[in-house]
Length: 174
Length: 143
Image (cartoon, rainbow over all chains, first blue to last red; front, top):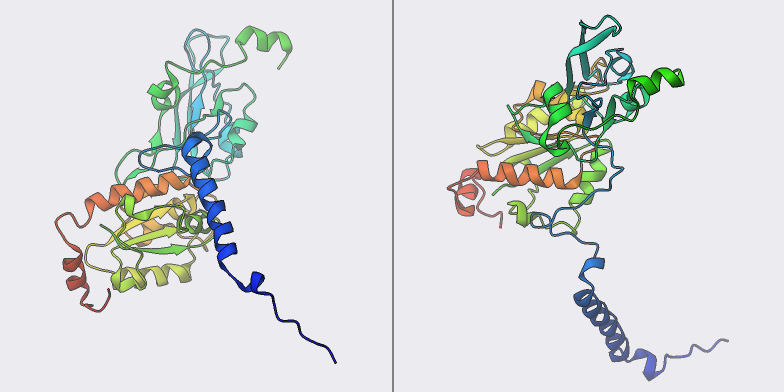
């Protein structure tokens, strides 16, 4: 025969636990008032969440030092794209040493899945995924971006310089 | 002022579900409250891939909605069936319904979806009160 012990008055008296819980909430509240930078929540329309510099967002076409486009229209990114969102038209260059250059380079952002395969496939560091995110828009606004938007949109501040220059690339044998 | 009805599949479901938690304040972007039935809704949020079967369901939901019918498509699958464009089992949202706002991304960020809802809430129901919307729906016992 087992005897069931009733709980003491101390443990069945709920005021102590209520006071403990309220002490925790007030401690957190006062801490958050004095440490506003450490708070994880964001009041969305007033504050904007800032993504890091390595964030893979909308595409960038890099430029050479003289300002022309780095892309050589080799079509590797368009072949590797799983969603077929890149369309390139190549044209003949005036310089006989240069084989071809893209006369139009369009990315349909409605189809893009932001996988980064174009960036991986590119042998000359011409396409990159930039840190800013693709903007949503109303029906009818332009979602197909051309060369002008990809190289010289105002966020890029006059073009994103490619790592590899033409001479360095020939010297290293890429 | 919008009353959203959310249709969600795939990985956009995770983003939309995290949006519908209590962390985000929907009233700040113009949502009065979320609709419990399609008859009370005037905004349809489509996230994720769409089957042919699900396309029929979406059309039924669209017919049952209130008069000013607004549609937001979220994610690349719903926008243009991105990587599954050659597959017959995935349909783009703009082929079945008139879409008003596009949110690209795979999956998109939560702030982009909120931006879309706030932009579309300024289009719809500009001069209407809550009572007008309820009279349009024919349900006075909603609140």
